[in-house]
Length: 395
Length: 151
Image (cartoon, rainbow over all chains, first blue to last red; front, side, top):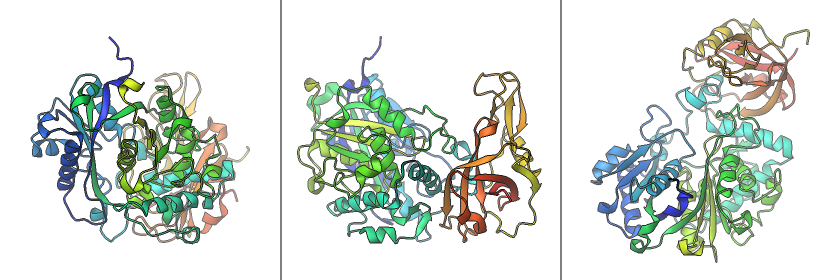
């Protein structure tokens, strides 16, 4: 027996988000419970309906303070969930990997309604002391940290340097991403930074790791997002389910930041290629794009990976900001992205993409959205999702 | 190349600040690399079956799967493939901007290694430059690769 296309057997049924902000000083478990209770209610379900639970990353020991949320078993027990499917993993296609895995679990009959969450308390945990480096030089960081490249900003900067070198892009091209998505954040009441950012502000900001400056880097926050993934056959019980048109992952080059063959591409390209191979929709069908901006430069990579631009053309596409603005041909990071709304590690992008296709984004809603693409991750750990407002009967 | 552009000396006389970095996580496979840096050598791994030289050492050839592999030095010229100058003091002691150069060794099957660039050299390095790799003691207790122009 084979399942022709797992995406047809699962829907995203619920979305919940806790308060999001700087130094909330609330426990990661309480933020998580806020998000999960809201997501289950949003789906039109009761907690007793939930029979699967997953998160990223789960317990990972000594890493960046506030990076890991509560353990999955702690959350399961707190909410009295009787689970047929439980998982967490740090390795895999991006922080939204457990959502892709939940789609597989639901489609495969392991559970009927899985709740998946991501919680960060990086802002409270890092306090006023500023961001630190990563503490443990193993796995994919084995040949970066001992040589002084102790921050993701350094790795992203190496990629950015190569991209700018090969394609003649400039810092101001990155600035158009930061300034345009700041304008989008001004409409999002829960965004951390809402006041305008000018190109002059951007270009005069202090360097972090060249060519990246302060405004190329996302802002740590506290917050939690939860998503409910349900069996498609449960649609009648659900308030407003979202269709998963396609998902994609893949690591077709060497799985190390510095050894990836071509630093003008990332895992994004493999993820998006697989995503497009699993749907009859085409890049021109995308109405809004939610693309990972842990560092601004990743947006250039994702635009090309998603085939929303030709290779090497993304900088020209974002230049001037018109194409990616709320009234442009491809509204980008409509809630402000991580650069302005806060570092929910891709889950803010997933949440906003879901809200847009449900027509429930409120002040950030773009008119007539049918399809949203979501690209999450940087470097080797990337995942792509295509969500739509089409019902199963439409496709 | 008549002159090797890797190693040659364990540079103790450098006036540059000691590079600040995270302690390596030693494994059975990577010990040969860290022993090599103490001697001023960049030690990768080579396949006795198909001849491929690759990094890091894993005990198995990543092209042909042979377990008949051995430590092999990287000795060819290095070319800067990507480059950044870090300004943010992520760790105590990182006050001066320093460079991070991702170096490719085209004469050694395209092996790549990240290297630290001393603050006084940081502004002089650019993508495409042919560079020299040496090894300098770092805050993490081992010798790490450092990159500068061939002088």
